[in-house]
Amino acid sequence: MLVSVMHVNNETGCIQSISEICELLKDHPAYFHVDAAQSFGKISEALCNKRIDFISASGHKLYAPKGIGALIMRKRGFMKAPLKPLLYGGGQEKGLRPGTLPVQLIAGFGLACQLAEKHATEWIQHCSKIKKQMISLVSDLNGNIIGSDTSPFVINFYIPGVNSEAAMVLMKESIAISNGSASTSSSYKPSHVLTAMGLSDDAVAGSLRISWSHMIKDLPVDAIRNSLLKLM
Image 1 (cartoon, one colour):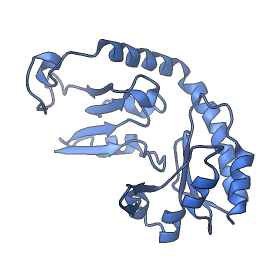
Image 2 (cartoon, helix red, strand yellow; image 1 turned 90 degrees about the horizontal axis):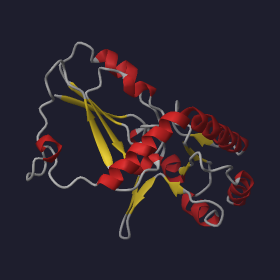
Image 3 (cartoon, helix red, strand yellow; image 1 turned 90 degrees about the vertical axis):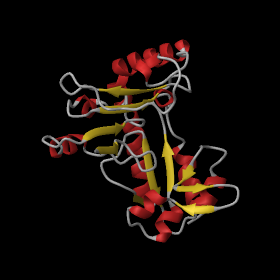
Image 4 (tube, helix red, strand yellow; image 1 turned 180 degrees about the vertical axis):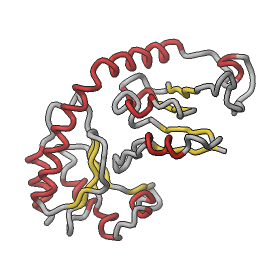
């Protein structure tokens, strides 16, 4: 039996309470996996809970090279989790993943983890200031923030009457922005995440997502505001 949870949602930034889930599973035999792609090295405190059996992390989300990730496993007593490999071949990674290890990528991921451990607090402080600016902007335009208890690195919002596709086109010269939808060249589907949250069709269709990192000094808040005002 396995319980698997996304720590921070990549679309809304909503943070799941890992400590509460760990408490609920305290006396349960189920294995607990946390998808920490969006939180590892950024919002990592909850990941230290010893009730977590598996943590998956992606290197490029932590500014390491693309193509490297990690699955962290904790033993229960002296027993390993009953994992089975998806690929078979050599004996690398104790038989779980065959193939030559990408040493350069691993080293880059390791360095990225070291830097994150050293600078995470200042990264959060800086990015929280940017988020406060965006929250203030959305509030001034009578918009709505989607989700509560969200990551300081992302915001998802909608302004009543503003079409997200039009907003993306209008702001493309000043900022890279996406809407809360999955689209392909042949189809357009509303975001399953926002739909599952029970938002109205207008809110789902109008949702806009902006994310940033500690390397962004400032967001072009005035340009974003002016673009949105043109569509209201």
